[in-house]
Length: 541
Image 1: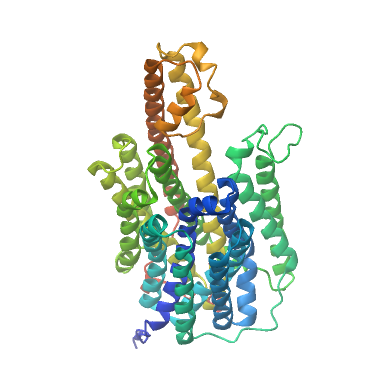
Image 2 (image 1 turned 45 degrees about the horizontal axis):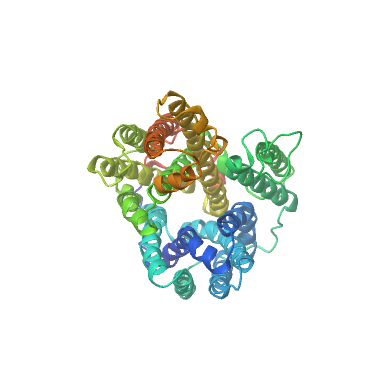
């Protein structure tokens, strides 16, 4: 007798609206922070480096606390903890709206990050509890697309409000979204939690310390020095920068976390994260692919605003227009790629996605100029966005469908840790790479240029080469004895060096994308209707 498998009953999409808006809430807040920096600097009278601590504090809180947040959600119950932390996020928006000084704003983002550390795994767990089958894949695609559409809207709205009104109204929008998410959360279905679950405090400290050290280390490679300590470093160890030391110590703590967790699982105790979500090569390949794709996205999101706002001296609104083809493409692809899941296995989509991102980056390295509005450049960004959107949804979906529903929170915490760490690493490495390449290009071009004598070069701080606009460079050169012809020659050298640096940087990113085809080739070969039962009783992989 042949058994027929009945399709699961369709569930209302109303609960998904709450989860979608929760992702929008976090992404909009993150996108609003860079737009608000100029306003905070002007209003509070602080340097940009201190104002940017709001961004660092948010990211650190999310990455360091997300695994602990996932276990807390399993103990308390996902729906209840979701409502509590959404209300906490609303409180952080109120802190930003009423902030009398920069430290109050930094504290507000610490609160927002702590709330987001629980919202991130909550979204995954609640999707697993409320949706099954094709609806679950569609819901995961919607979460992936929410990040892109939030970035577009934050830049557009923020650029307009920041120009006409100020930076604070952006957080009225954050507050309004939080209120909407809280109201819609009453449509969610979830369990009551398990009070017997104990949170592993040792593992929490190990992974929290590892993430904080890795994030601080990578984020400060430029400022503190990649090897030797710079004058900006807070301290040095035998002349070495603390940045690489933080990275090494973070890796040591991360390894200690895995050793401790494996030992705890072997003793039959509840771990901070169940490592069975990484139990097979397919799940590990999905995590590697997620790290690379988020890191590549961070590099692009760092590089384009760098050139448009710093090099070209244009506004955040101009940046949003330049980024729109990419962000809209990511949004649409992340939503629509689930339609291909029944036809193609994850391995095929993953390899194709990384092939697209590699081809797009190579293409951009050839056609890019100092003007981002050219048709070939826009076409390259669109192709990159197609690959990016497909990959973000795909690797997330592989992790969720491979784990039983009771481990959805662990998958969510793994996703949150991977994405936040990859974003920090991608941004930091992009900055360090571009500045290093720029220094090499500028140094070679200056030596070879006949109109720039050594006496003039000696008056310019060449040990502090960075990306600056042509106007800022002219201001620097005005303090020297350079002639007008020499100033023009120096500006031309700077323009060419920046463009060469950008092209070479894009080629190196293309090489990283090409290497990512290897983990993508180890993704599952089965399609959704062929997925084996991920419950513990079904046996090992």
